[in-house]
Length: 110
Image 1 (cartoon, one colour):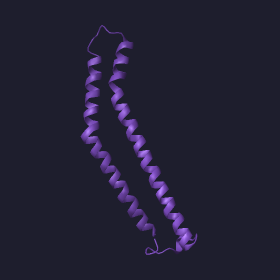
Image 2 (image 1 turned 90 degrees about the horizontal axis):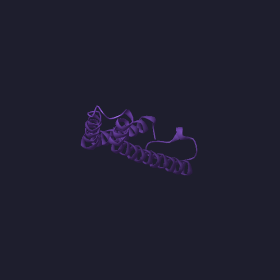
Image 3 (image 1 turned 45 degrees about the horizontal axis):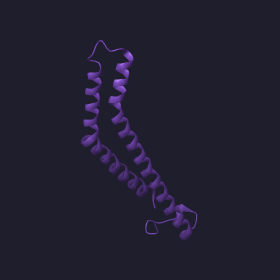
Image 4 (image 1 turned 90 degrees about the vertical axis):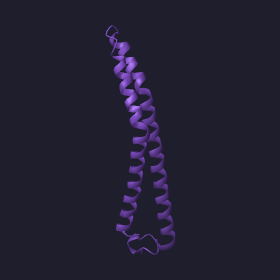
């Protein structure tokens, strides 16, 4: 596979993943962030509360967003692992069929 073909494929995958993340952000994360910020602001409304109570309240408000970010990071990590395994499998098949010198591969062989 030529370098330009591999770069084009990488760009295509990156664009698709970025688009998916943007979609998740628009559909879900922004509403979650808004709720988190509004909840955190309400924690500060009671001026008689001590600092620890306010901090705990704000922390509870952040829990949902933290869980969502952790889940997103886990899923993206899993996707990255799958893509890496796929690339290694493809490379192994090329080496088995055509030898270890990747510079000799043509696009039709790949």
